[in-house]
Image 1: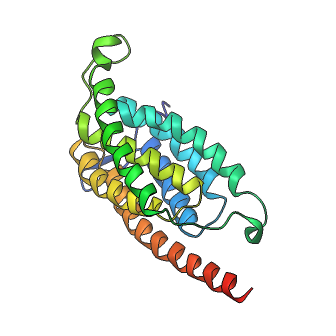
Image 2: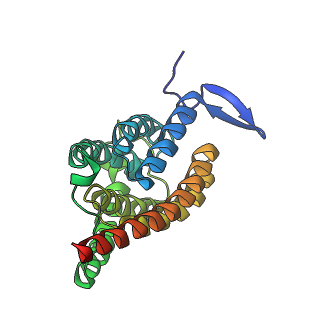
Length: 217
């Protein structure tokens, strides 16, 4: 059985074939995001399962920037796992970015998207044996990739604004993945959107509690 093939059908939902790899990767991703919203360190090891499986999915549907993004996600997942380890009370507190830091990240996302789009848009020319066809939705896919890199880095550093970016990423991905025919993954990102909104609210509540505790002490 070719587990990593998106053509290997596990079950059908409303005429849509859900592959084994899509199902397992999606469930792992949902659990990982829920744990992140709950500020639970297990988000990272479970997230690594999602990352590895989605690497193979994105290669097969020619979303090359998303595919390469999984390599970064794997590295930051290992980093986040160690950064979050230990007693929850002893972890680095949740933080907010300053106004200047927010401006910096907006500019970084804009310029990063243009650079990424140029690179991804030419992969089929530079490496035709590996990437036989041109990448799909180059600019949208690149925007998702760059915002995801920034968001995951902020998540690993326990910064609240990661959820703002995840909300935007999830909205784009719902449409993008549906249009590419990986409907179950698109549905996963709808669930991610709900979890990102919950995560933003939950982390905001925690940062207020941190401020109250700091004031009392």
